[in-house]
Length: 165
Image (cartoon, rainbow, N blue to C red; front, side):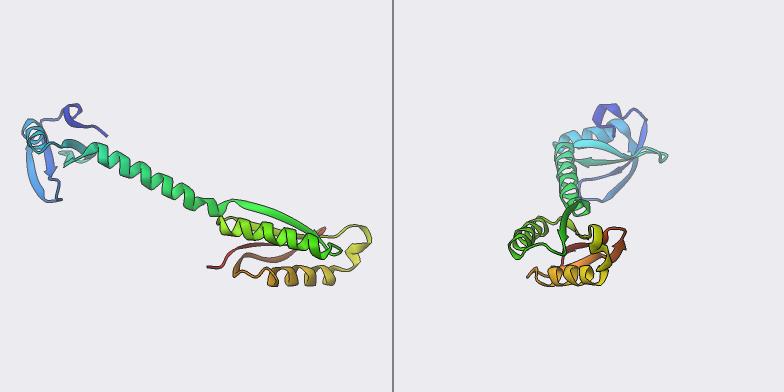
């Protein structure tokens, strides 16, 4: 974006700080109007002929833009996925520890991949593994939504959950 003296074309289409269109005027006249009001002249549509410029506080505009980018970055955290693995023989205390870890992740707006792994002869009991996964998710004690339904993997079952607020 070009600002103030960087705008060199002789004619510009001007919009004032309230959003009202002034019309096509000379570049120097538009720059004088902006300086009278203690604001900046900012080129917002350089490809138009004549280019569209607006009277605004450029520093405040940049601040709000960066603030919005930070906000969007925090919101995109939901796309990060944390993983937790359990087995069909995992003890109750260990399940409690993993449950608490999942609840922390969900509170921080992460998606959580929950996986039940089967080893060796356990692979014969795939129905038991599915039951263990379903009961574990039901016993979380927090509202959850499935981001990815339960699916079979070569070594067990896996699903992705997120906070169900």
